[in-house]
Image (cartoon, rainbow, N blue to C red; front, side, top):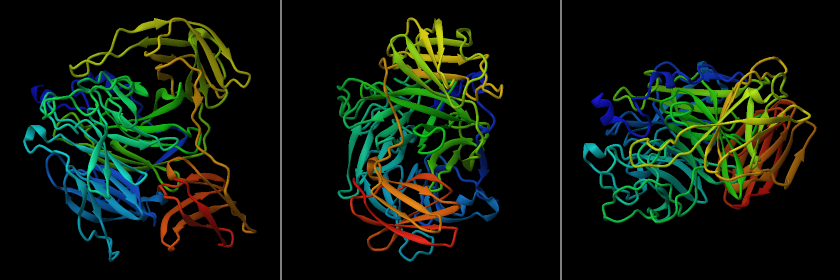
Length: 576
């Protein structure tokens, strides 16, 4: 017990009752298929995932506290989903607790505990020539008590890398002022600056619908429950830490920015990690994320109210090899999941599983599910289903609703307020039976509104896959829906081979493609010098978003379909 208390950090509260852990989903979401991507002997503790332009998957591994045993691997044929075809090769080793990797311009950048590094491979032999320091300067204390000062990430936007710097454990240790901050790292100057501060363990950075920066935060001191935050320059998120200068942190005097959503501790999440933003399918415009101690995936629905994001968290899927630490959407539209765990202590572990690498793809099944929850007025909330509801959706008694607030306190995990039961007075079902508007008296802004469904079925008499939802009511709606950005097509090409490509720009410098094909297709994005920047693949009619972020300029988009192998060149100008 004493060991547990000493070692527990933001990733989990190891004294959590077994009952709370057992409430998680244990099977794969029925609308998806899961495949393992680990050939025999490949057991990665995944700390980062990304794709090279040629389709190889880059996997960084962590390998334990306070050592330099981390590695980077290149995994071939991961997009096949067939483990018998997958091979792997060690690209770099002896790395200092790497917790983020990003491919930019075809080159691999790695976030180590003390620096941002470039791993060049000039002779293309599949092994890094060197580990080249690009930027650094943030403080990492050498004493054992400080070895939990992780550097976590990372994302790349507008020529800048962003990473999160966790604070030390135990809480109260004197910290440098950049600790608890999301930092912006410049590859041009080799320096960094605090971008937003007041976090504890920001382990899940992701770019959102229009290139906005989001991060998950773990429960702990000043954090009564885990949460999702939108990161903007100068924001403060509420964690006050003693600094080595004796004064406040960079933004401690700024009003606290509330979270986009709270995740109720022990029921839907314990230690959220990196979300993946979905740009296609039933759940497009939403995020899914893992949890380092829960062995499940959660789903985040977002909407904008008064110009700021707020939203709802749902359970999404089980069926995982290990606790998911990193999740990304690949060039093929599949979701790639990297697992992690350690036997060193109970705070970063799920079911004793230490490693995992999986691929999750839609299987075409229609599943009755709770898709979204929205604020529509002071006394109304709208619940949307993925398919028309069958029995019970129009009955108020089938909706249990509660609310509570969180008031952050310095004590570890303290601050959840008492729960209040709310009464659903009426339910109005839309004509298509996809939306139920609940009239609820007594809802309070700033509270979490919790929904539990029972006695409701879809047209096939199945209960909804998600029967619970936790909505963070920062402000009263109605809000503005979040949609996957699609601009007016700026170029198109069609041929007799049945392949048609439309290109359009989306937020954050990414390129979008609308593909119409009668079979499998592949797209290559090349720069003006003819270098392949990215390869995207799919089947049939599909919307695809580039994995990379592109500066303004001229690019060549080449499409190949299976019908005759014809290709079409398209020239598109990418806005920043």
